[in-house]
Length: 548
Image 1 (cartoon, rainbow, N blue to C red):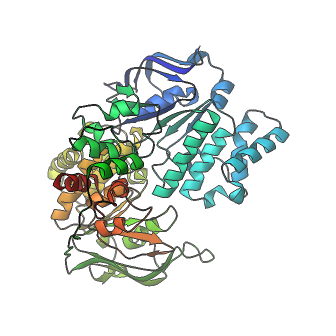
Image 2: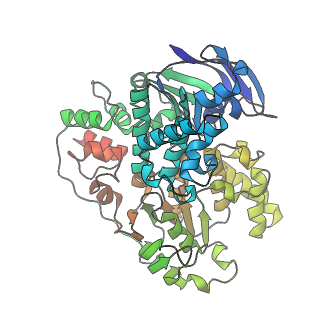
Image 3: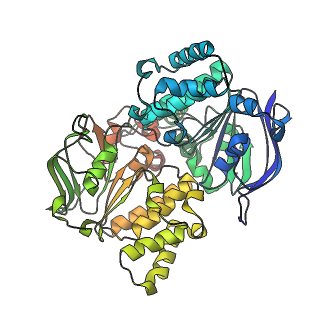
């Protein structure tokens, strides 16, 4: 039975020349799991917000949205608030109270539900989601994964008929992301909940979907079952975001059913190929050390536990070094200490062989070190992207006569020419990430620190980012990246390291690092390790298969 219908929906933001959503028509049946994907800025988030009456953005809308046959404009606020649930990308944006138990009760209180029923519903939901062990904690003490789970539970306690989620796993580590996705599957299968999910990482959700909506420039490019999307014979770049199993299958000319999951991909490879001995590639690095931590200890307050506990690392000049690990492990803190934003109370931080305290004033940030934080909004201080790019050039004392040339060059390089006149806060998460990177690169650093640079980015732009970082590396720039994106790390890093228990565990080349892990490894390696242990990327698996 149809629960949601969108008819010829078009939406323009104020003063926009092109529509954010362009003539979309689709129908969603009760109990379906719908996955929405497409490049950053293609209109996915706008479409989702238009489905939720209270979150509809300001602008010019035409077309219709029906919920259970009722035109959205005629839907009463209580029904919309309780029956259409919405989980945002950033868990901090949706958390409104200071205690976990109060967060769970907040929505029901606003709906005027009696207190005895609230208590029962909250207890039921906390038990279902396994929240009882941190039920009375402060929300500020929760990890990213716990906050996102709490947001989901806070919506589910109102027993919605539709659950809309906008990239809910983009800030989660791989294990927390997998757990969150499993929870969504459980809600869909056990409760018959209708789910509409926007996601860039399709590895796990693609096979769960009843239908996949692929958007491009505001239009619905495809809306079909996942197996049909996987079998589309086209060179469209958005298909780069399909699961590893699908991309491996499409790259090999073998007549067989297309695998969608790791299990199916593993079975496909083992039926058609045989194991082969491999030799690990050699890694030769520069003798010059760009960044070094020696037995570094750090805590945020005197009475709080240590975040960094004897952390040590060496990053060589011109190296691409990736740090992986769980939410709250201390990865971002390590970058803060390297950048000088936080000061260690014990140990040494060396930048190009000099202790960080020897860099006076802004000398550390003058053509030497730049840091792109996890939240790109913190980079913006002007009311247009171009204004922000101009601001960094002014701060670097770049002459006026060449500022325009530099802005044009970096905008072209990072693909943000069409965004220069826009306000940074009007952009999608992925677009903000691109513009923040452009601003940071204008400082022409020798050492680049990146905290979750692929967050909110589609597969197409990840390839652009890969090319940008590759060119920077060729120019001798040292890159240290904290990321949850295992595939990105496997494709780009010279060495990867796992951050655990306050320290960085031994770093190694991606082929060795991922092949020896069970969970912190790529989907491609999970499929291929029985045949080719050291194949950790889709490209490497395809190459081994063709050689075989």
